[in-house]
Image 1 (tube, rainbow, N blue to C red):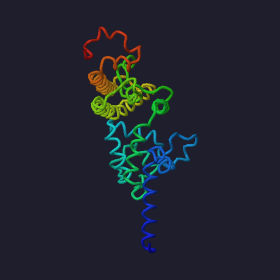
Image 2 (cartoon, helix red, strand yellow):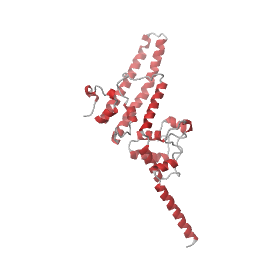
Image 3 (spheres, rainbow, N blue to C red):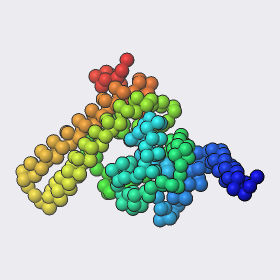
Image 4 (tube, rainbow, N blue to C red):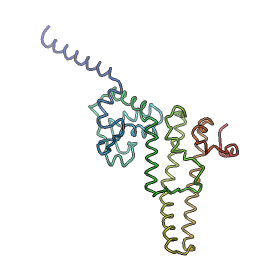
Length: 279
């Protein structure tokens, strides 16, 4: 056997061994070796050390936009190779802080990426992470609004904030949301959050102006127009809130609704059939 043939056999053998080793690696192993250097699996105590968002947060946003497993995997596979700002699912401030993810072309194969995507979708985020995130969001909102967060709705107590409750239990097996239900719930959440983002700043601004004017001795008659506008905005926000409750309840089964809703909000439901529970 001449040297050329021996060299060819050696190269073929090396490629075969390398391919087999890659095939033997699990999605977790590939993630740890190729992704975890940037995307940590947990939030560190020192957030200044992060160079990219932790993977639980990334996965949470991916699943919120793509509730079906195959869609979430397809997004990850596409984005990792061809990241674009208009495709990103993370909050804009995250991109502003960390920058756009560099393309991983040539650093990870399509076969490896498929395993990594499946591992991420199957394992992140866990429920503890989701609860922690929502708790921190609530604390931040309270800090922004002062000692007590401003409530932009006419009805301050007794009505659940279903978007928040659902996101906390989005992948909770006990609640058992189906892919079809998630696909219906996401537009409801999007419409609700868009309405809140539109009207709440106006409500808070008017409340502040009215408070300051009243404490400075302004005649109430001069504030009547602002009070009327504040009432209109709060009415519109309350209707958005009520529509969210109604539409969400239409998507959920009676068992899911009962499990999702805090016990204190279930009192008197027997007298409230007009809310639209499914039989």
